[in-house]
Length: 115
Length: 114
Image 1 (spheres, rainbow over the protein chains, first blue to last red):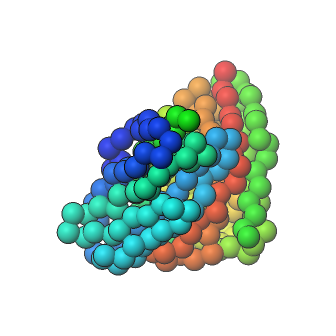
Image 2 (image 1 turned 90 degrees about the horizontal axis):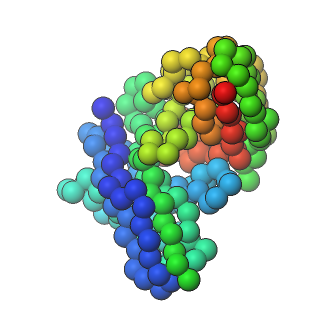
């Protein structure tokens, strides 16, 4: 079935470091891919999405490029700030039959930015 | 902007207890969802609905019932709560059933089953 894998459970960086959080997916066709962010004490919130090969999604300095060849949608940011500390979720949009309308979330990656 | 509210925000019950979690969205979204969030598992879908009276089963439905009474209201029922259901529960809504729809989440309900 459709699934998403985030390999890092936690990432610790210093301010101004470069961030990469890895996301790989398993699905046939062209599912939409999403990044969500969850700040402490809040519900997850949509960051951005991409829906076709080579499309770049971006928001708030974060970006990711849909790569069907490597089945990846890695999150990157050039210079992180302490305020970026949060949990980041990669998700895949269900697009077939009974999977319509639902998202498959990865396990999440906690980002800790040390000032 | 979508508004999703949940009540209660915190709930403590005992094993075997009966619990109802409530969710309301005020943006006329068709789809509503219930998730549980646990360390190491991320967000797992319990049940979802695409309209009043409709119910779809998610990935971890055992021990949970749900009911969508109106377009705005979606309830999660735990009729015989167990300690394994101690978790943070999120409700979400979206305005489309397709591949691309963004989901809007509520603030969460923390449930503890003693």
